Image (cartoon, rainbow, N blue to C red; front, top):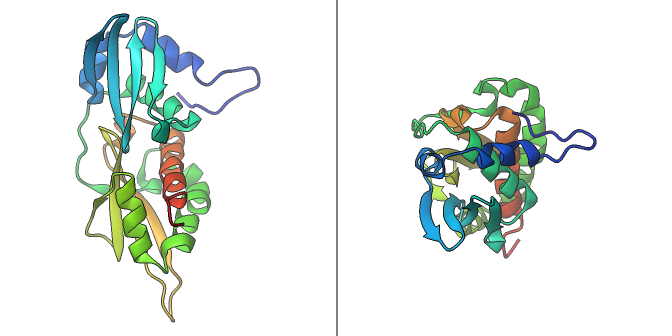
Length: 206
C-alpha cells in the first residue's frame, strides 16, 4: 500500500479503514504496542521514536505527543499498525537499495536524508551525538558515529556518519534492519528515514 497521494485522495483513508476492521488486541500484539481500557473503549499506545501515538477504538481517534505529532509520523503509524506482521528486528543492517523495491527511491534517499546529515554533522560528531540521543538514538559500532532509532517497535533505522577530513568529504548512510520490509514498503521507509533526519536537523543547538 503506497501512500503517495493522488488528486482527491486522503492518504489516511485506506489505513483508517483497516483499523476500523481490526482486532485491537491482535494489532497491539503484532505492533509491539500496549493496549489499555479507557472510558470510550480501548486505547492502543504505540511507541514512536521518543514519544507515543495512540489510537482509541472503536472510534479510531488518533492522538500524538507534540514531539511526534507530524503529519508524516501519524500517517506512518496508522499504516504500520495495519501492515505489520509482528516480525522482530533481525539484527542485520541493509542499505536502502537492498530492500525489496528499494533501488527506485535510492537517489531520493541520498538527497533527502544522507546528504543533509553529512553536511550538518560530518564536521561535528559531538553535535550528532547530542542530536541522536535527544530523540532516543542508541549508539551502534558503525562508521565514525552511528545511532539506531526505533521508528516503531519493529522498525529499526540506523544513521551512520563518516567524519570529513583533508582528503575525504564527510558522508552519511541510512541503514535499515533487514526485517523492515515486513512492516512498511520502501516508499514508506523512505518517509520514515526523512522524518528521523528532519528531527535530527531541527535538534536544539543546530
